[in-house]
Length: 153
Image 1 (cartoon, helix red, strand yellow):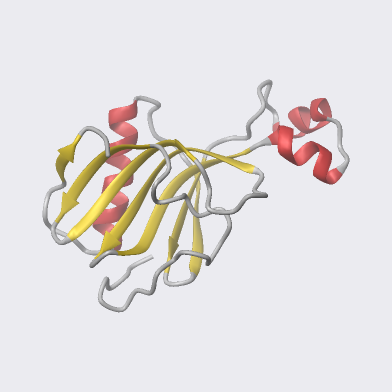
Image 2 (image 1 turned 45 degrees about the vertical axis):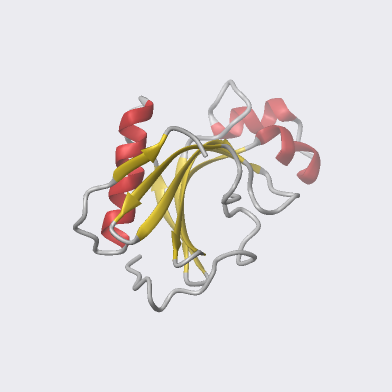
């Protein structure tokens, strides 16, 4: 997904799985003229979603929430009663022992959702942040390096 920040509409309300721009903000960055918020275990905008969002970035331009990239995992505990399949059966189907499916990367912008598939990166938080920031840089064709503004908002 390649976006022109000047052409982007707000993504609020586009999809219920979009990360809440104010939930669990752990760090903030300035990337050129973009404000980027890093969220750790944030909430989704929708109330009835069946995913967990362990890591995400929300991107703001001129006060408008225009883009998000998140690492999402299906929440098997939420899915099980919704589809009437026992949790253990879902765990077997997903090939996991825990309550979450494999991590997937999702992009939200300009009224669209795009999946980049499975997250293949490392599980160290700094490497996850670097990956998510690189997606932002690529999406907006931004050359400026991210500058951390503060530890938490």
